[in-house]
Length: 208
Length: 96
Image 1 (cartoon, each protein chain N blue to C red):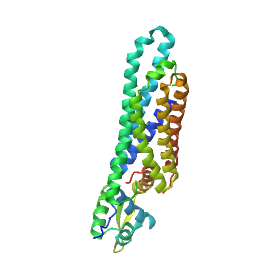
Image 2: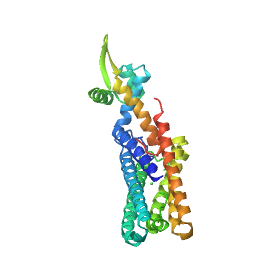
Image 3: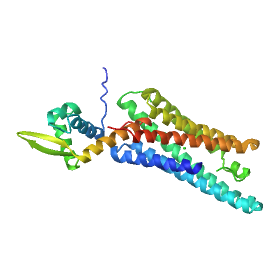
Image 4: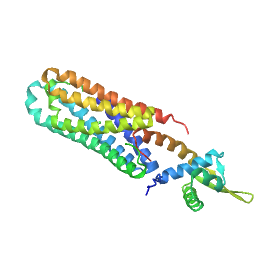
């Protein structure tokens, strides 16, 4: 699931880059960088979680030795996500500032082993991610209210589902339900990316 | 005193407006028609048309005594691409 999310992120990022090259709009450059970093982070998480899963299946007794490495991977993953969401937030802050001064218009593996799942969650950083995504979701919701277009609705749904996925990832700290929340988080995250992919497919079919 | 808000248009948006104006007139048009369609002054229009010619998006031709501006294949591709980019940016709430 994370591999698919990562690929979609790269596709959206590529389109944002194409759009930036056509228009030179800074917001699109930030959007490209955000999706690129999000794609890299999600891909790294997929690779490390798969790698640690395989190692643990083969050598179950070395779990304690992997803890440090898993922590490092989790930290890198969370940081890439925070940078990406930070860039999305910057896009909208920049947009809101320029919009108000111009037109005054209103304005982010299935678990091989459960312990590893929990180690991949850094609650404090998840909370920051939730805050940033909360801001982005509100902005895209406002944009949808103003534009009423299906594209804007899909982007709002996409970021809304990513926000929900991070809420599920945060709940992984509840030991008994770790795996359930992991699966829920990954499914909602993929659904969010699929919304963005659908939007992209619709845009690509647009005729002049 | 009431403050008038003049909507900002990026260079890409101005180019798209000019090219769209030409497209609406069958792919070739004189400066006066383009001027109204793109909502520009004559001097600014001519300056942008020169840039569009340099970019290979527009071609300058003579029909009798009149100078006309014709959309090239590259220009048509730009118009189509701009519509898609505009929809993409609009979905994310980004003004271009």
